[in-house]
Image 1 (tube, rainbow, N blue to C red):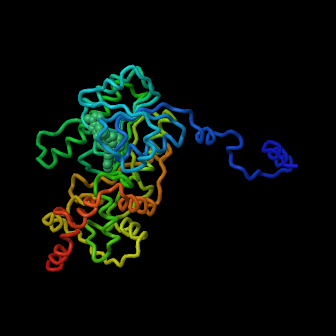
Image 2 (image 1 turned 60 degrees about the vertical axis):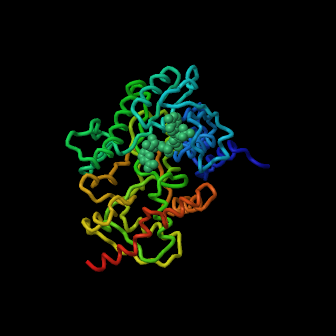
Image 3 (image 1 turned 30 degrees about the horizontal axis):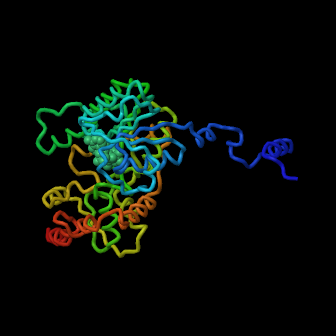
Length: 379
Ligand SMILES: NC(=O)c1ccc[n+]([C@@H]2O[C@H](COP(=O)([O-])OP(=O)(O)OC[C@H]3O[C@@H](n4cnc5c(N)ncnc54)[C@H](OP(=O)(O)O)[C@@H]3O)[C@@H](O)[C@H]2O)c1
């Protein structure tokens, strides 16, 4: 006769055997975690890069999702899931009508591009939503002097008067993110706000060419310039790891501020390059160029995800991720990120023109690489 699970456990215990079952058999917290309470989630945004992955994971976890956008951006991942999502249309600049007199358990503010946008939506939703999650950025720490970038570090809320033109643009974004964090907390209070500060986000759906560049470049093979010091630390976060952890933070009502950075160890530039190459068979030869003035003269400073080799960027890949890991942030291996990005990059979701631009566009670094290598050898 077949024994049911309870009888099996009882007889195993009676025999002094340790049942080879997970702790979930006893209704442990992990069982609770696997079956979260259903949430009504509002995403301000949702159709760009991070949003579709949040939508996908939220639906998989049994939640209900509404998105609020202008209806312009078409997702390049998980498109098929959007028929299961409520689509509210408006504009964060001047039309929040669709958000009025509605209730949600949690709000995710992905599309915050101006402090006023976050102020307005947080004030509007404060009595109709339980928690407000603001998608910030580690840019709140810019300039990145030093190496202690834990969540407690003071953030920059004003552009210094002596900032030069180049610095101003970077300051603007960081200051906007920092003051938006404060706007969210002002309205919802510390105990109902969740602030997530991602580092460079990578993976399928990326709207920048930063990471796709390296996948395409290393796949192509040949002599490849690696800018910067070989032992420089690299940080990035796979968009799926980030999205899934953010949804779990909401499920756990984990109010607080978190850096969202990976991987879970100090990855050097060289480890990163070899990690990307592990997914390809292309013959490669690497030329490391760590002469900063040469890099700068040839416009190579700023190629990501390597740290930009200027003093104010020194700590950019030093975001402390201990608190994130303690609250459930996990990391896929780099090879999975590379393969998923590669698959998406060559799918119909990405226009041929964009792929071609990386190889042949006016600003293509790949196109200039051979010439720069020649110059480098001549020095
Ligand atoms: N990429 C990175 O490496 C990185 C790093 C750190 C932090 N971040 C932050 O991560 C966040 C997530 O960005 P994402 O683009 O991936 O988010 P997303 O939620 O996937 O997409 C952005 C959304 O904003 C909507 N939107 C834009 N302007 C709007 C407006 N005026 N009114 C209403 N909706 C508007 C867009 O739809 P419509 O165009 O249809 O309106 C789109 O759905 C951003 O706050 C970004 O600053 C990104």
